[in-house]
Length: 314
Image (cartoon, rainbow, N blue to C red; front, top):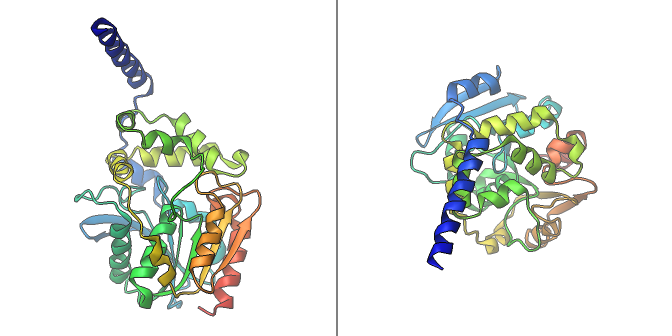
């Protein structure tokens, strides 16, 4: 028995060594990442000890800007197409959350949703924003509704895209998220983050995998590899936030809930739970769409958001 365990141990060590040898991915420096993924609208500002990457675009006369918050392992770029479609009418503010994109790590190693909601408020305070429409996708949706709970006087409207919140039941989940949540194995992701894994995860997140381009995969992959991001993301996965979903019922802001029917990460039935718990809210289920509607069908989503925003006269 001891001999068998000894052999099994060394076989496991050999397997892990091969995986590391084949899939080793070194970090990309902050300087290289910024060269690749900033543009003329990119800005950096220190908030709570973090250099946050953000873009503040669109109508400067808009006193109630639209704030967009991305999901796990994503970045402000997830809103690129939507911003182009809406910025002639709205001031649009988006930023990379700590642990992701070009913002990078939080020196305090805190990445829970409550921290993110507070970070968002401090970030908006620094920009002089007094009220906003707030919107988020996936993790960003969870941050957005928590923001609406914590700062009701600040929130003029809430738009959720496939938002995290309620306990998950029956979702298959993207491959990358599954690997990242496995104890011990997930430590490999600190050095082994193959592009193929990122591509597969994106294809599983889209309702139509054919919409996943090589350029999209490259951006996601390289931003994950920016120095510090893999360690920070692993910390987030290892310490998931405990969400008090009973607080959702306290939200008073006008709310729109949008969900992709083909979402495999957070099933579309969750849209009905949000609609039930937020008085007066509206919900839309988009056929043929997956977990990131604003990336998959930005024209459709922009039309939906425009109708909601201006119908509510925000």
